[in-house]
Length: 432
Image 1 (spheres, rainbow, N blue to C red):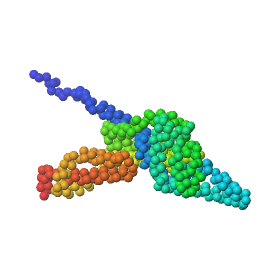
Image 2: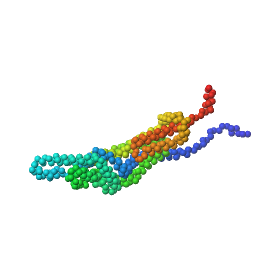
Image 3: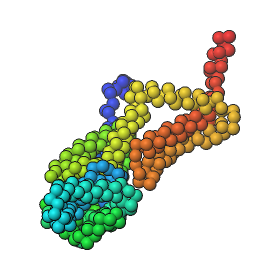
Image 4: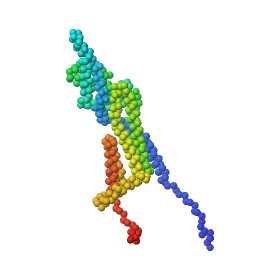
C-alpha cells in the first residue's frame, strides 16, 4: 500500500535562489564612466575654447590679419597712431625755432613780424597733424596696416618663443610695436607738399615705438605658450570626444543630453565672465600709456572669434537641453513628440499610394540611422571652415529640423495601415 501521508499537500517549497542579472554591474560601470566623461569635458571646455582661439588666431598669420583688419578704420586706433607720429615729428622739428632763424634779420628790422612766428608755427604743426590723419584715412595706410600687423603677428610669435627681433619686441617689461614705416610715409607726404624741413630729420628709436602691453610675467607666458601650443588645436577635439563618449555610455541618453547642454551653457557663462574680467585687466594695464585709449577696441576686436564661440556655446547648450527634454520619457516631452511625429506621419500616410510610398518603406526601415546621419550633417555644417557663428548655428539647426521632418513624413508614407484582426471583424459582424 502506498503511504497516505505521501498524498498530503506538502509545505511551501524552498525558494530557488535567482541569479542577479549579469548586465547589472556593467550598466553601473557604464554610468560611472559616462559621468566622469561629462565632468572632465565640462572642466576642459573653457580652457579648450581659449586654447583653440589662441592657436588659430595668434599662430595663423592670415587669421590674425583678418581679425585685426577692422582696426584700421577705428577712430581710437587712428587717433593713437596719429598722436604718436605727430609727436615724434614735432619733437624733432622745432618749427618755431626754425621760423625764428629764417626771420632773424627781418625781425630785427621789423619787430612786429615776431608776432607772426607763433601763428605760423601753429599752422605748420596743424598741417603736419592734418597730413598724418589724412594718410591714416587713406587706402595707402590699409596696405601698411596689413604689412605692419603681418610682421606684428610674426614678431609676437618670436617674442613668445624667446626671439626678441622683429617689429614687435620686448623692451624691458613692455611689448612694443614699431611704427617706423608709418613715420617714413608721413614724412614723404609732407616733403611732397613742400615741407622739406622734415625730410632728413632723424627720429629716435624710442619715438618710433607704441607700447602694446606691459609684460612683467612674460617668462610665465612663454612657458605656457611652449606647453600649450602643441596641444591647443587638439584639446577641443578631445573635449568633443568626451561629450560624445558620455552620450554613448549613458543608459538614459535624453537625460545625458540635457546634462551636456547644461554643462556647455554653463561654460559659455564662465567664458563670458573670463572675457569681461580679462578686458578690465587689459584696460587697467594699458591705462596711462599711448595705446591706452584704444585698448578696449583692440581687446574686443582681437577676441571677436572667441566671443562668437561663447555665443554659439550658450545657444548650443540651450538647444541640447530642449532636445534632451523633447526626446525624453517625461510626460510633456512625450506628448509634444507624439503630436509632432503623428502629424508628420499623417501627412506621409496620405502619400502612401504614390511613388513616395516605395521610398518611404526603405526610410522607415532605416529611420534610426538616417536621423544619426542628419545630426552629423548638422555638425559638419556648423564646423565647416572653422568659422563658427550664431548664423551658422541657426542655419545648421534649420537644416537638421527640415531633414528630420522629411524623414518622419517618409516614415509615415512607408507604413501601411495594419489589416483588421479576425476577432475584430467577427465582433463587427455580430454587432451588425
